[in-house]
Amino acid sequence: MTDNARIQALVDAQIALIEDSARRKALARFLIPPRQEERDWGYGVEGERYPYWVVAEAPDRGLILVYCEYGFGPDMPWGFLSTNDPDFTSLGMDSQWDRYLEKAFVNCGLDRSSR
Image (cartoon, rainbow, N blue to C red; front, top):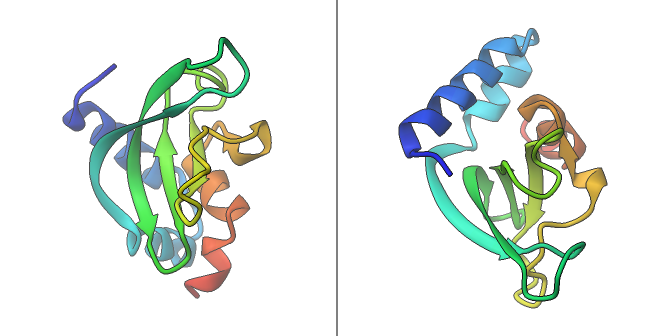
């Protein structure tokens, strides 16, 4: 995959694309230094796992915003995942992924909870 500096640069580029300054500030409240984790890919061979980067988190909501180059990643690398259920260890469904970090932020509902 890639290193933290490259992922941070991708996050910064995504933040710069957000035209709504209130939304940009709301997302900034959840941003963290990127960290790499791994989850199951539920659509391939059993036991197949992919690395992803956590770029934002809302522990009280049980959500993380992530970047992944695998799975849905080639077309939709930005997504949101649940951290509330310890048995839920997959990269989720396609509806949790998008081309843009802003869309992942909106789709998971964090933009509404932070205003």
